[in-house]
Image 1 (cartoon, rainbow, N blue to C red):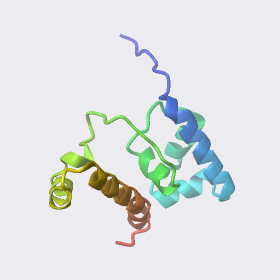
Image 2: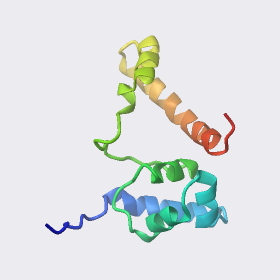
Image 3: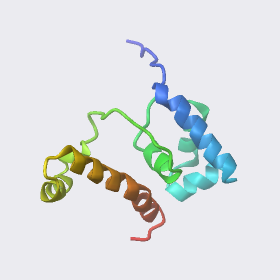
Image 4: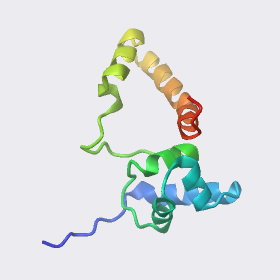
Length: 125
């Protein structure tokens, strides 16, 4: 049975545009950012060319490195972060069940995300 092509997720158009703008404004080539993120250059080129229809696990580090906000659906292959045993344990220690506390925790996690990703990608652990 032939595969029926799926249209790209709506946010992909914005993500590609944002990544292209990031590369241009920072004078970074697709090859250079691929190397910085530990990706194959062809992965970056395919994403920029519109050959990918979703935000794949390979693309996420690229977007995080560039500081581009993205939202993806949780695919079956991904474990939601809150279900990870270590994350759950940390949340249980600090979250009191209040919405206000959840907002603070979410803001803190989002704030440290780029630092964590840059640390991982630059081997600064």
